[in-house]
Length: 193
Image 1 (tube, rainbow, N blue to C red):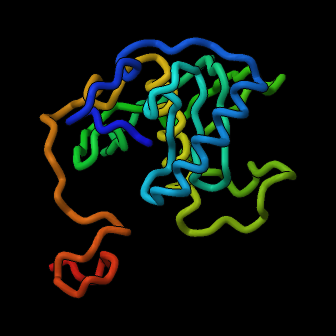
Image 2 (image 1 turned 180 degrees about the horizontal axis):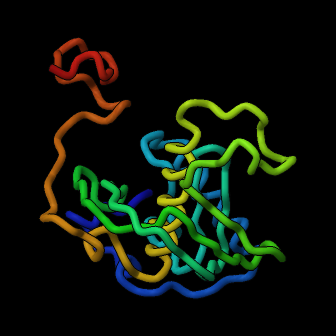
Image 3 (image 1 turned 180 degrees about the vertical axis):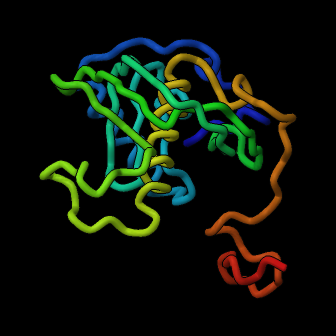
């Protein structure tokens, strides 16, 4: 279960967690994916958010991504981004992240490159979808930000360490919360005045 750091003590949230073997990391990743599937409101989760002292995190934006003992190789093109965190529900913080990041993880031999930049029409790899949807760049940027967010957790950093503006509690219902209109249905954007 995700520890709410506003009301509960989490001894691992502000410390760099320990490295683990790939097999242990994959077992922990399974727990993290199950937790994300249970809560249905997050796109990423690090082991220390549920009280496990391990450098393992998962991200589910386009497809599931597991990162075990990640190391940031390079990052460039800073961008301001409004972030929330499952460990601090209701808080939104404007952070400085990067549009491009290269990381290395222990479960892969090669480095991973995440980018929120626009892809030129002639710049697609053979493995990529030929037709890009209108919001592909936004989705790639969200995935890139989420990877950075989860790596920060593994280093003992939270969005509160990156804040550019004061923390503001956001009481707007999330997509699976009951709608404030009184309908008892799940929140929908059409209910926003």
